[in-house]
Length: 226
Length: 86
Image (cartoon, rainbow over all chains, first blue to last red; front, side, top):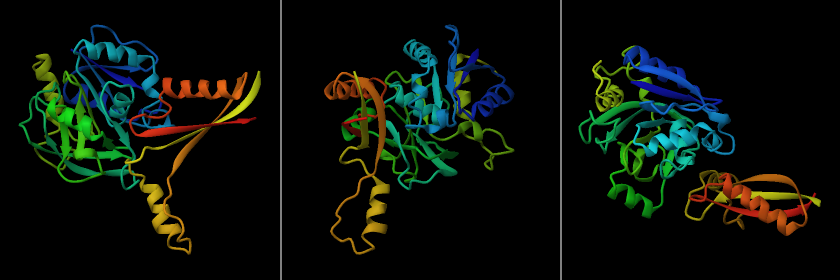
């Protein structure tokens, strides 16, 4: 299977993601510059973290107008798994592929620390190897990571099982402590924390490395035996 | 055609917290002698310079641009548009 890693001007986690996909999970990954097209036969697409366009105007909003987003939208409509991490999540909400918005953290600080996530939906292509309510220690690194939806949208997210990850405690003021959501079909997932920074023992102090299951879930979804 | 300066002010809708404005109010202004101030809201302003036939058209055009390109996020922000002679 081939996984596309989209690169925007200012992406800075694209190489980390590519390294994890290829060197850790033996996947066939390829970079795609944001002004290029995505091939129709690609199996999954990942929008990595970073600071596209220097977070100017609002994190993710300028990249959301990049030509490649139209292809991401088409692939999303076909059910292809799409994952947005951190700035990738911000781009997915700003392009309308995911609901909600990401505001500045309540503290106004850039937050860079390990935190715990709780898995709320284990039916997505990126979470099918988790147990429901499983705890994932994982790093966050963002300034605009406070997920916000109004009460009506929050009710819809709960009803349609679109909340994928929640923080185990209040981290940044996110609505309902939400850290990641999916679209109604479940194939488009966005999350603020960085799983690509937590799947190798050299940089993960926890033996079990539960973030690996995000990538292992994708392998299972695609029927790949690594 | 004339040149206009169109000021687009983007601020949080009521109900969306503005921790920067609250900090400026509570930890700066109200710690002085300015007790008459009851609220401070932060906002971002973009100044467009635009060629249009009149102020009304200039305002409509900039509103269209802001809506089309999501210059502001309508879920959490509102815009106020003011037009001036450039």
